[in-house]
Length: 237
Image (cartoon, rainbow, N blue to C red; front, top):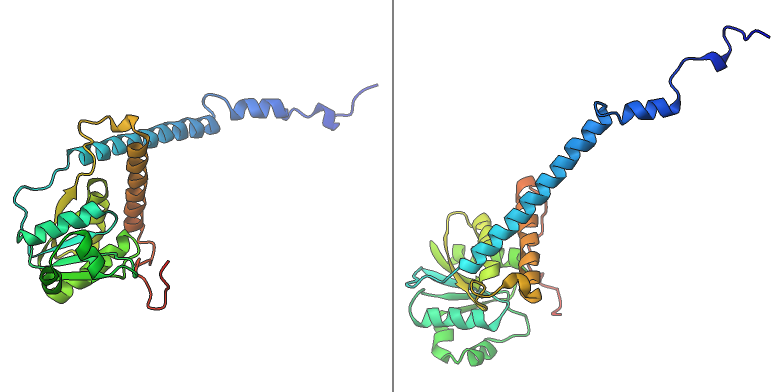
């Protein structure tokens, strides 16, 4: 029996296996996309790792300037060592006035004065308590308003060494005409200590590096309206 000329069984179209073979052929478009996608992924991962190592190295080398001097001082809360250092700078005359940014609403000036063993006159004269900031973005906005109200052009920034880079990013973004001088508080000597073998140090550095990447991405794409400031009706947690 002769097969009709138009019988589908005689169709010479490529079978499914042949189509897949062509699709994944070395010169096929899908293989090229996967190849370049793999290269791009490897490059991105290498850049992220390199960026983290550079960030960690920068943090380990941070040291406070020997003769710090500015119009004023701001300390970003997050540890007693920071506040102690900032108050000590104020006593030495490194700045005319001190802003303690990000103070919890239930904390009183007397409590901080007692903790830092400072005189009543020093706090009454030259220390301002900032209760609005909720995070680093809030610190920057609270500080920018304070700097604007006081008319300062240079400010010493006191915060932990690992937190300094992101703090300066936020401060310079909100107050570009003010000169912010870093005064890092070195809590642990990461230069002589194997930070990569210390889970706490490694976790802190990785967390801060991710936050820096997110802050950079936010500034690049112009996304986000969060000001990081406590509202008037927000209860203390």
